[in-house]
Length: 380
Length: 133
Image 1: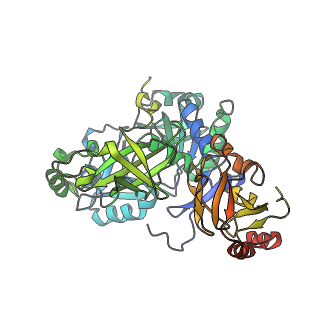
Image 2 (image 1 turned 90 degrees about the vertical axis):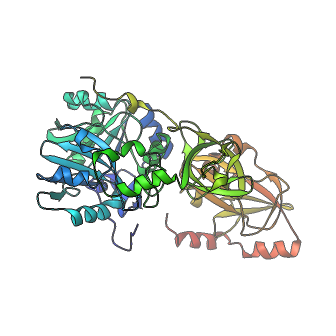
Image 3 (image 1 turned 30 degrees about the vertical axis):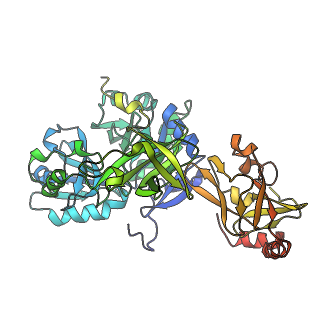
């Protein structure tokens, strides 16, 4: 990512973060809170109660017009035809070689689509979409006009229902317009933590008032503001991919375990031909999720080894506040990593190298932690 | 938190205290102010040789590992075993109960030279003033 020397961008909540003691760091060209009081405290607040995240740095693009659906179908891997108005889906934009340009959420609204993309890929995706836009397709970048606040945790539905009762009936991955704290705004039942919860899209000018209203409504729980540090640990425990880690331009959806978001039968889309070829040829690398058997915290870039042979590297790693263990996701390459047509799985002796010492790891099935998202929504 | 008198400091924010024939080592209050969510302190076993300026261990936090550098060369003679059960002590009492290792310097000439390179209190304070958190 080219962050260059350009000044950092600020979300509509930037002054609130600064005034409330957030530790601010540069992230994808934005100045963002990494923590307020502590990563573990904020992480556990979301697992046990509810937390609030400013995710206004993410990109929000409206796609409208009679050609909107066909246009998006040609750019994205999942099948939009399956979405009724008010429904959303996780999807991918690929490059011509079948690598991942970005992972996104697309919602079908009454008058078109809302596409939510990663902050670090916003420029790339907007350029990619604009380059291919044809007559009958209107693209409107709504990133500056709307903010985005994630309310996450098992207590989120109750908290929001006290302010907007109708949100309780919103099914998982659905979106609708609701009156919250005196303003009509889009609210979706989505998130990146593995817990039940919502993402709210207020006008930028109303973001701070909404944020404070949500905190006030959750005062007795309490609901706490959470930074990107907790967000990353929560998503890793939940087994969600993060762009630039599990997925990038050199990784196919098959290799990243995201084949479920690819619907090759829906018709042509960018990267489809390459994807089918890659599938026939077999994976170039194999994803492995693991916990550390002893005290040790894997980090991005750590070597994965079988005996004294390097077989891959870690793409995400952290200490899991819920498992109280080091957890990580990496990719294995070559026959010794079990990546060959007849490859034996070497997981039994897989190790991670931390500061020159090799620690044994135990391969795991994702997610590391199953939160309340799995059973969320649709209670109406 | 003010530092006890008689300490010397590395630019990498370890303190060193001459205690008989051993040098006790920890990290400074300035350093720990940046460190949150400590998970464990990764220290080598007694008997391990260390070299001045080289990493001898790390403070592992949820988000990052902070490397620890030996202020002098020698052999580790004692390790603060209490940190295994309560690693957060390094941030709560960095100059006292949060000490990490004791090094027996390798040879007197080399040790004197390495000791002489370490910063005294005013020089370390000036060094910290050039760094922002």
